[in-house]
Image (cartoon, rainbow, N blue to C red; front, side, top):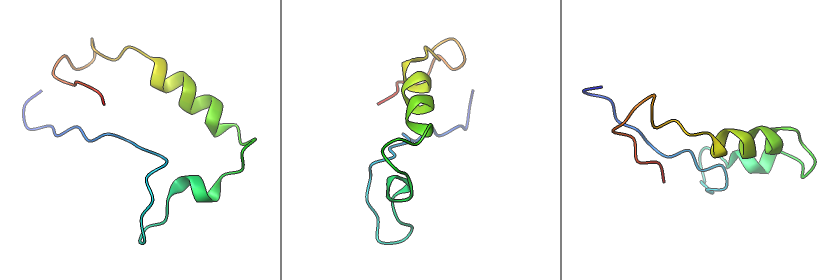
Amino acid sequence: MTGVECKPYIIDTGYLFPPSLADFLGTEDEVHAFREVTEALDVSRLDPDFNGI
């Protein structure tokens, strides 16, 4: 894929503006399970140029 810039998605990164997404979530929120599953997926066949983090 040419011209595509992949940026890492880091939920725990703190910002002044916008605030961290983790600030809005409780420790028991189901999004944490979704995050674990999606981070474990092998997406190398979707975009071979993507290195991940």
